[in-house]
Length: 259
Length: 265
Image (cartoon, rainbow over all chains, first blue to last red; front, side, top):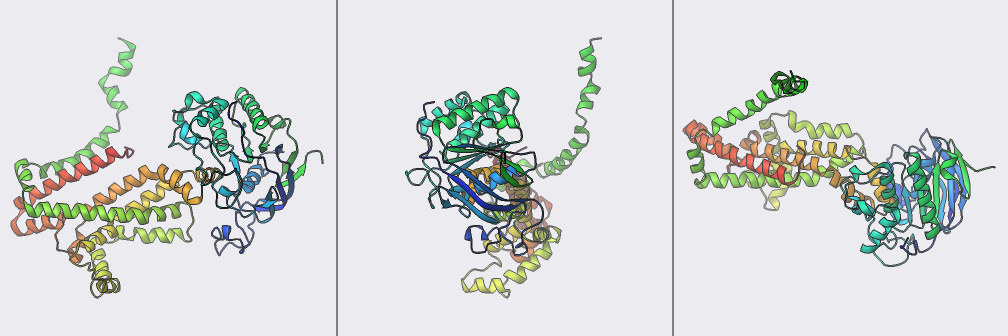
């Protein structure tokens, strides 16, 4: 792969006593980022699914995994780390900096969802380069006020597409792509931002065996060359082989594998 | 007999496969035939273009309807979005309020607007201090058009945003977009065909408005009032060319906009 460098540097991800509820409210009125999400009728933690309290520690540059059955809270965990789902209590730290209440676009974290969710009104190239351009040319990071890190330019988009094996379909509409191609585009779209932390929510669960094997190999190669911190979830052990550290999740509770 | 011919070429079988035309075609004819009767004097319709009063009235109507539609888009898109994403308390009450103009007879809407926007109304009184009047003024025409036609637009916006998977916005945010950017770059373009379809419907309904305008702003005369005025004063032969002209222009505008902007058929 000729796209050199990847993210400016991988980041360490720590979760401390993190709790979240499926209802999606945040009870801390002192946190302005999430105040707008509250309604005055919903200030108490809602009933239903509870995530955590959980602790995780992902060293910078690691390829970590979360293993658990369907409905165990894998997606909710990744969405909470990405900032798409508010945390109820505890802390999410990126390189020691508390980002628990930082809006998702300022966390330097990208996420690939279980379904590719490609934007249907854009072609493949526009999907790949969707992430907003940085306001400053500084290194990728989670500085408040920046919109993600530096981005690939023109030619680099083609190089990224080549690395992902999708350079021949850049001008195609996303509706005509196969499942494997879609997931590759979704991965490239997340990488375009050059994230320090990449979250992969069961990226191969919807793929056939051959496409899944290719995707896993691609993920390994990209991680090896770029060195960003990766957290991948899966519900089969074979989906997340060779990850370190590995956590198990069940009914919202997380523990290190083997513990 | 050739089996294919038996299966596919028999007129009865062809007709059976197009069963939907049986109820659909009469309905289209039911719309087309009365409109056709308005165009049965094409020369008179063409001559109506030369009538200065007709030209002015058409221009006023389309300008006010266009203005009301644009103002409607500005307000209806955020409202439809908020309702679709369940970000409003008591959303059903909001929608019921928005739908009220649909159930009101339009003269009632005119009376309500007159009480609010008239010189003695509290909005009309405030506006008068700013030297803005609604009664017998194009601003009043646009206001009445907005009142009676905007519910269509709110419905279209709400349905358009409902059809967009909210996870697309989550994806956009995970890619570094703010909430506003996610809305502008993902949800709005995906909902746009339906919003535009609603805008065309709103524009068309605004052009056709009569009942509330008769009460709020009889003058300057929009095309519906001009047609009624000529019909009641001089008879049908004077009203017919103007009505025919409205049919032609209305069809061209609606067809043209929907073709250019790719509104789903």
